[in-house]
Image 1 (cartoon, rainbow, N blue to C red):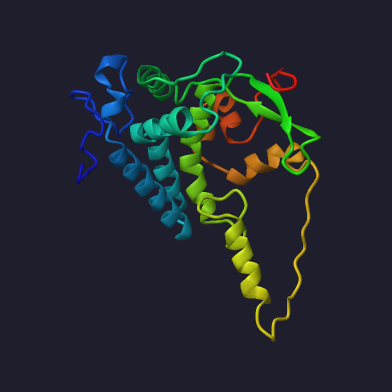
Image 2: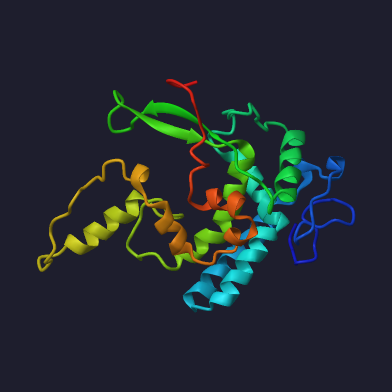
Length: 257
């Protein structure tokens, strides 16, 4: 596919196109997963993310919120998110508390239809809690919560709407857990700061916050995202996608299963 517009179907679904607020439809035979124009879908999501980023830099907040609503309704966003979770992620073969995985085209199609139809009404499920060795000390274990597959797909959808706004607002010289950034960027920044005979800052502080993610103030995070549209759909359903644990509901598995 060489060209794409808002009206061009990225999926061969008869009269149903990929972009817009309507559902994907319950006729799964009409959606041929392996025939989806993935480049068109990913280009659509990428352009919308760029528009959210640009509007944030311009501090045009009404436009930011409208574009985020468009992203949350986008069929292309749903398809790309489901593909990321069920086909690309390393944990795609790991079952959660409902035992569901989607490793075939038909199963991924069913998940995509279900996710898009429940985008404004889904209630998150309890997570499966497993304990895995810590990278810094394999003798110690750290807890890992694994959401059900539908929760992970919704989280990926919301991420595409929320991430570009905050990428435009974050500190320019932070490199952890950000798209397109990594350790090599931090190393380059340190080198550029410390190099040369006239460098004034010639040391680096290496620090670790114990249990940082376990102690994050979720209420503060929710207040920080302000009027993000996903919060307005259904407070019980969408808040856990953004910041809150799922009502403390956890099914424990020890140590790895």
